[in-house]
Image (cartoon, rainbow, N blue to C red; front, side, top):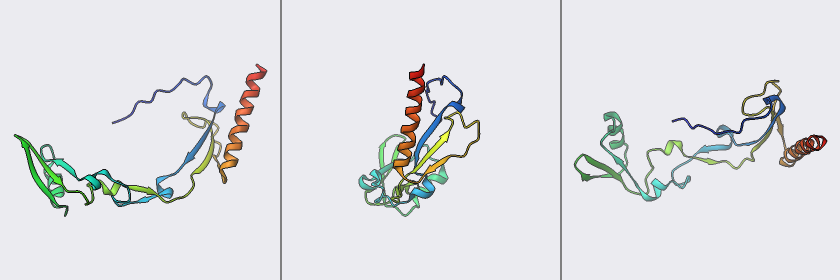
Length: 148
């Protein structure tokens, strides 16, 4: 499923803009986590999987995952595998927790449309330098607006 973004149409080309970003990439700022570490709701409360509509190989994998479950019939053609709380959910491999690193403070030329000049992004080592860069840029814009 793709998400359609609604953006304000820029008045100028991307070369007239700067992008300020704080980034915490998955590869460097997060680590895999257990359900308990990730405060997973399914781990805490248990979860159900509807049997009808599952591909046979998926159903087999779920039933033979080593997790405790009971079969619950909710009605004709409506069967659930109910997994008790306190055991890993079926999406545990997707859980991540931050490792505690500060974010990366990045300034790029251009905007969401790209960087037409191809200039290298600036990585600030300290957040206050990133904030100062942003403030200086904002002041330059305000000065240009004031000039008319």
